[in-house]
Amino acid sequence: MPASDLMRVAIIIGSTRTERFGPTVARWFHGHAVEHGELDLDLIDLAETPLPADLDRPDETVAALSKRLARADAFVIVSPEYNRGYPAALKTAIDSYVDEWKAKPVAFVCYGGVSGGLRAAEQLRQVFGELHAIAIRDTVSFHSCWNKFDDAGQPLDRAGAGAAATALLNQLTWWGRALHDARQARPYPL
Image 1: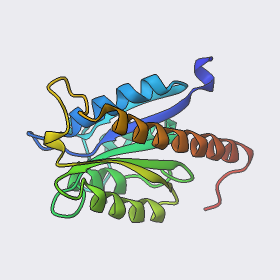
Image 2 (image 1 turned 60 degrees about the vertical axis):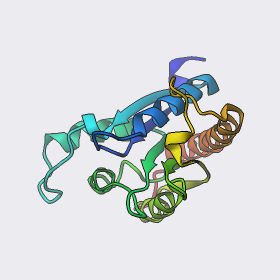
Image 3 (image 1 turned 180 degrees about the vertical axis):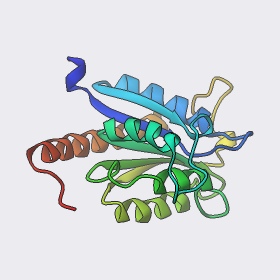
Image 4 (image 1 turned 30 degrees about the horizontal axis):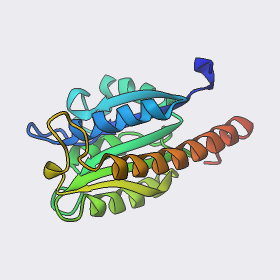
């Protein structure tokens, strides 16, 4: 398949904490997405991406990430649940942009304690709805995530996690292509 036919997906690691588990989850999901095929993947780690200090005074850091987000046809947010919500750095990254999210699908891969990050994912659905993005119904979730991966960074339940990731990617690619075609045929109304 020519590179121009690949759907562009930005995978965003939402945690910036030093001892975070997000990169483990994101690397596994990225590998699964590579195997899924027909995707041009951009792994964005917010811990390595400067975010604006003042949303009222955007600077060059906003422009740099804006290009990567605008290029994407779809997004996967990899987020923990901190105190029944999602990380502040992720909120800053989301709120720094508007048009980049519009009429594009967003999927969630979440992790955490007993809830598996699902409360954070539910909050993110509301936020992205306000930004005119489409939240994918299925979510990949890891409860008590620290006990769910082996030393090589692979889920202990590879079949279950793989099936959940495949279902998510199938929905994401369907919506991503449908919305891409719709945006090409007709600009999204403001």
